[in-house]
Length: 301
Length: 214
Image 1 (spheres, rainbow over the protein chains, first blue to last red):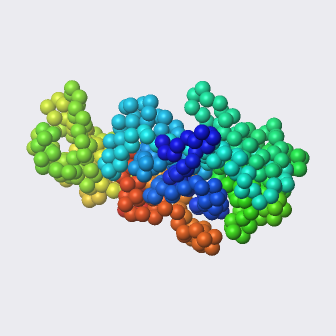
Image 2: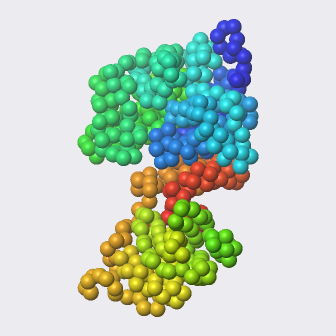
Image 3: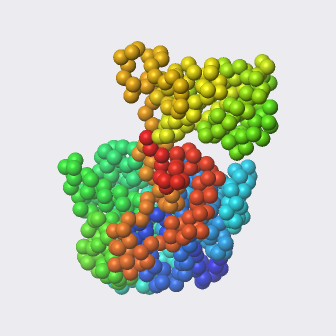
């Protein structure tokens, strides 16, 4: 919607409404901090969306009440639309909710009418003009891997795993579900890190399952992934979703009560880039993490 | 008849549904005596009062017969308040029905002229009404904190003071520019919740600012 596609394949104007969501500002604000630093370096103008609510989350909130889920999502879309900006999101769950809500409102005129009428009571309107962009898409398609490489302090020397997260595989029907995960991998590779593949890469981290069966989520989802990472000598896990990040970190703590001890750092892609761009662990407030991300930062630079 | 009741009772009448030989009138529990008084002008015959446990509320259905047409006055009382005015002084035939509902569901019909034991065995404990279930909302218990936070703040969890401090130490504003940080935005979110009727579904008490509990 905004910005122009330059002939080089990257945008020469990058301005978005930044959707922070719940999890990042309330659980791991170091991701918010890193995003601001990285965006500034890469000439991305990310204007924080004012007055937003939870996206709301694409699993629990949606199951609680689909109409409530859709109204809040539509309101968030309408806030960005009023600013005339596309939405930039840092979370897979927010991405799925906002994209799906956009599609539902586009293709289901009956529900769209109902939602618009409720929004109108609050003086809001939504016309379906806003696009939702995941930070991975913006970094890969609008910024470009070559530009990212220009800002590297020095290549990261580390063996990293990528956990794309379930919701990253959501695409409009017919599109390549591996588009964003591949972009994600290329961005991590651009930092110089060695991306180590794993047969369990697509296994859910277990975050949504925690709400109904914590033991199952920890033992059947998280534990096999951590074991595989340990066997492969992985030094850190990179995610593109704060919920996955929280699950990898608190999950390692909770698994101790079942006798499983791990100490694998987990960080968000914008934090990895910020580290690669030379920002220190202190500048990035990496001590907020519950896994040893600070040590990883000191080791890789 | 319904129009005349509405005229007399006003906002206490919440709605009405018409069928060939039946009219259902939904009323606020505080209006039950007014509605009964208004009905009396049409010379009703009292049929029965039935109680239904809905989880968070108990629904009372007062059945009357007016010239062969069934009039069902429906009202809900919150389990945590558990009280409604008696209509026995206005409609003496309701005495046994109210005593039965009181004993089986634990409802307090205030100012009932003869409360007390009615149908249960004499040694039945008075604090264990057999047809009353424990307070239970529509939403699964483990999701109630998320639902409460969503309705009240628009976010899945409230911002903790610890995280506010950590944000400030990191050089960030103590709160993000989210709905809970702005009165106008929060009011919009609240309207959205009402528009979706999620507040009702979750059992949100707007006065207390939290989900209803037993």
